[in-house]
Length: 529
Image (cartoon, rainbow, N blue to C red; front, side, top):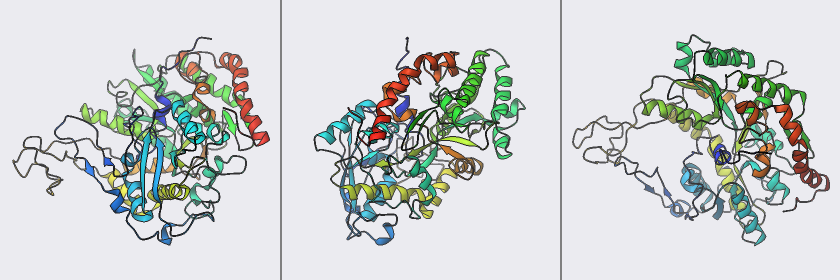
């Protein structure tokens, strides 16, 4: 069977980075360098004299506390030792966690007396192979970030530590995410306590284009309870009908899965004790046949477009892409190219036949590998991440920063290189040293409306959150679903292939891949390899 493999080889790694504001897409996944706990918070590397200054932070000094206060130990379990400092935690990741998460690093140091260093490795399968090698050699790191293939693949291979004795799922700290934690249960144990639940892909658009075409605004339709497949179809047909080159919808891989999820169906349902293949189900077939038809009529594009380029020529209506990365990259595109408009994101449209509004969801967080030497320290990093997500003061500060819509300047004067920011003139429009005009830089802006939509998308009272499992297996398995005209999800959506035919051809292959995992679940043993 012909496979156009690796067309978007980096997309899986990328989509795991774009869900939260703390996880930017600029991390270097290919670096093999190691970093220290006294890390530099690195801004984007550039020769621009207005580039941000590096801020060297002595994390060891910040971590010099006497003991951990009981107020920071809510949500812990019986294996946790009260008052004990975190000490030094070793992490494995494909980017520098400290440089990427300075706010969490600060909480970790000041509240738990902990420092962290990251051994940086490659992403994808190489990342999991590296983790497996370290565990087998007795050199396990203490902490890793959650990735899609951790559940069930990594857990089923005994690569992670169950945290039920370390963290209390019934604590108020975890109460609003307890159902999400339960979604990742494996044989009665919880290995993953997420920092947060996130939206997965969203539908991103330039509001100005919608207004100019006199179409209904998807945000208004969403708040009115009228944003569904029918409204989506009507709009992309009207837009694509404008002429050659106009595209109603395009997006990243896995978009098809997320449309299927709006029916309330998981394509591969892993419920902790069994694995169910729903690819031949009526709901999956109905969804994919609908999308396939839209593609064949010319209303859908050919797949992935970087959100920083998607709205540049004004010919794309809807982009299906990760929420934060999609919004902010598209906003930056308008800013840099002086394009009028307002970037807005809404959930994937509701299936009009569904009994409620289901939405494909994602999470972000950290896990403790098997064989970790400093489990308590790793757990305290997980607590720091959760505090960062839930502490009212921290949340209020983040929200104010997201909504700030005033001018933002580079710290250095573009003429005399005077550091206005360090001198206390961060908001001055001119340089106090030479009176030259300061240079504006891009800053993402979230309106109250957009933040309300974002909040809704992770609210279980608004949506039934769906955590689907095809992404939970290795990359070879995922190639069946994405990347090319013969893939089960991308083929029909972006290339006009027959979903019915593809599933029929690949069904036995998919079942053969799932069978070892089913056997491991049934027997309580590990998957070999």
